[in-house]
Amino acid sequence: MTDEESKTAAENLAKRLRLLLDVAVAETGSEPTFAQIAAYLEERGTNLSRSRWTYMVNGHRYVQDLPLFDGLAAFFDIDPAFLAGAADADIPAKVSAQLDLVRAMRAAKVKTYAARTLGDISPGALQAISRFLDEEVSPESPEAHDRAGDGP
Image 1 (cartoon, rainbow, N blue to C red):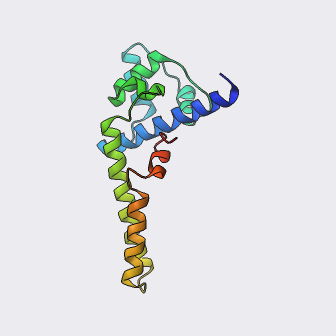
Image 2: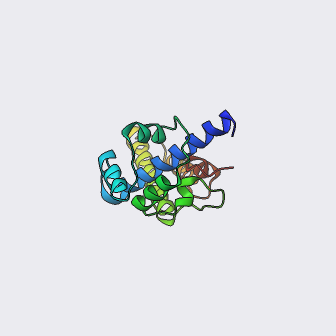
Image 3: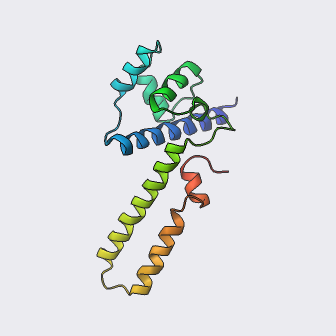
């Protein structure tokens, strides 16, 4: 693997981990702490140091540790293939559903902000902004897939 491929793989792993952390926040209301994740893994015989977790989540170093991926996948209740970045791995259904919800919530926030901020804007212009935002956050849009880390 070249340095560039390793860098890309590390960045993609970081995106998937951050996505899983975001889903956990949406499901539980708080982000799992390093201590919670490390304790869960330790119970299963896998050690995770704080520094390793940090460089994984930040995409600083590529990790190829299948037992670690298996443990993290169990913690987040997903298929390990997704975490490992397997080419044929689908985005887990709960992740996809949460992405759709987050997109809709973000669009609603922007629409509300636009309506408040642009109070004197015509109804037609506000509708045009709303249509644009709806198209931007649509799960079928290429931009949405790129943000999820599964674009071309």
